[in-house]
Length: 290
Image 1 (cartoon, rainbow, N blue to C red):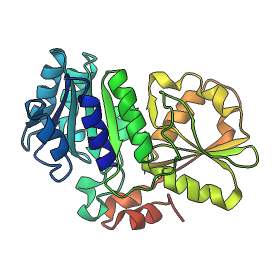
Image 2 (image 1 turned 120 degrees about the horizontal axis):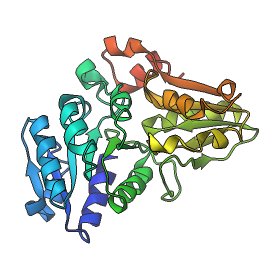
Image 3 (image 1 turned 135 degrees about the horizontal axis):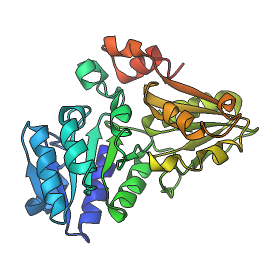
Image 4 (image 1 turned 180 degrees about the vertical axis):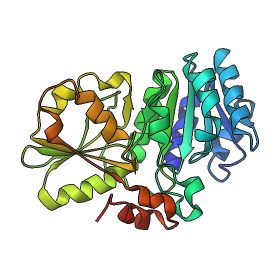
């Protein structure tokens, strides 16, 4: 996903001279195509994520669409106040890019386990979460964010993620993107890198698979009607269940009588917070995959 992100960002920046990239002294071997092509729109803020976010907000207030880029929790929790007060409150076009969402950096321990980031970001009323499930969804999300500049959070995997779509899908906040057709009236609905886990689960019983790469507080509208089309829907996410995507969906359907029984959630157990291992092992320990 990282490679798809930087390749698409360079392509978009060719025709939009207000796109800028600010990094927190990392991303090297990935971000060079942008830095070399647009040196006047690339900044290294150093290991100072709070300053990076404040800088991005200032640039955005002057007309730039700024992408801040760092690993896992560093561009989110470490500078939550700046995101809340400077970016979200003022509705500035800053996209916070977190690499290694979920447990992609699981071998580095809890400081790198990004399993509470949805809970943080979705509590901010103007933030749009972009959690693509494969490289093509990454490109689609990036195009949407650039065409609709606003406070946003782009959560990427680390590297080597498989491509599940045959072509770039159309995405929109709250939209269910079809991934795999299935039999029956049940569905798997994932966000982010949990798409692979939902496909694996669906193969056991032939249910359809959907992805929701874009969601927000405002995008809850209409989810009840969409879910009502199915007898049962299981959400998938590489995040703790508290405050995550499944919780968001339960909130979205709360006002629609009788739908809660149709919804179930697959998320990570808190056991992963105490464990150091590779991503696949942690997803299994956490209960996301068999």
